[in-house]
Length: 155
Image (cartoon, rainbow, N blue to C red; front, side, top):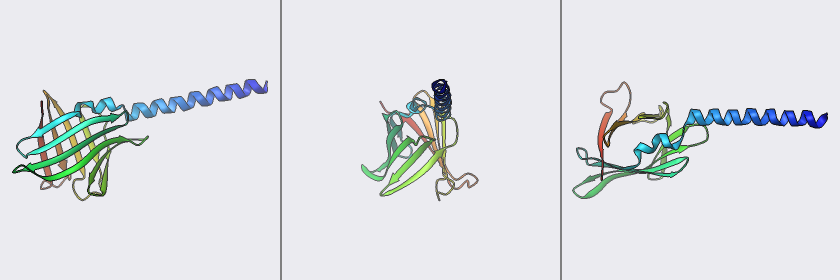
């Protein structure tokens, strides 16, 4: 009888645990929701470039850089990572990391926020289809702190 009760308790625990993991996965989504970012992107108006690759099932790695007169005048490392609870967008500039949390369900729009960052407080990616996307960096409510990048996927 004791073994039967222990067995039932174990099955109940496994059922609750796997249900919780399943809910966590549904909430966080899969790296596939970000796959449309993969590739090399060019905003010729601002001479700004971004490149993204899927590194593994919980991380995309990227870089953003700006070129003027054949010289790179700005560069940063980027990543989108799942920390087990949520997706984060991490910007590395020099030795400093700035983390933005995903605040919407990933899909054709990706909205990341860090209200404690001076600028930007929000980074938004919009999949516009036909191998184009927009990236917006902004401080909501401050129109002077708004920049839109219109990217075309490079061949």
